[in-house]
Length: 144
Image (tube, rainbow, N blue to C red; front, side):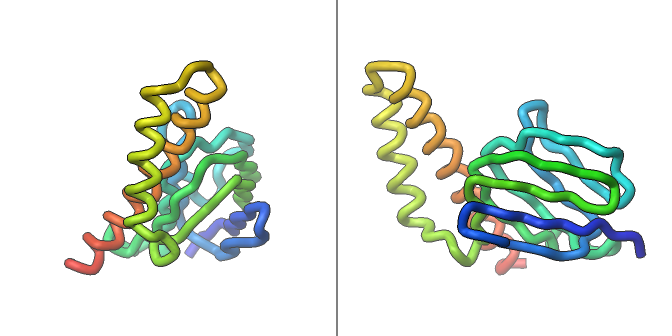
């Protein structure tokens, strides 16, 4: 089976290093899929959900999901390396805290008095939404 080496690095250190079949990442132009022998590329990763298919025959129910606040991805066909500000697995997400952060950020966005405050609130909304989506995907997986 063909695979691509995937490294996910945050300021906290190496979060994931594995040979995988497919990586789905959010970008400014939409989600892209990265497979073995992908053309060389450097791309921005936006806040959202990263999904990893470890083996070619794995179904969508077997995808591993992580929430990210964004970063930069480098792909050379044999290796994909994501330098992310944050990356959290579903089991590391406290859903209640994520919901509370989302609610606070929505209020911050409504009362923002300048572009910096608005951008900060929007960033927190995007990150909290990604975290809640990953938690939801984990719940759905458990029910299956």
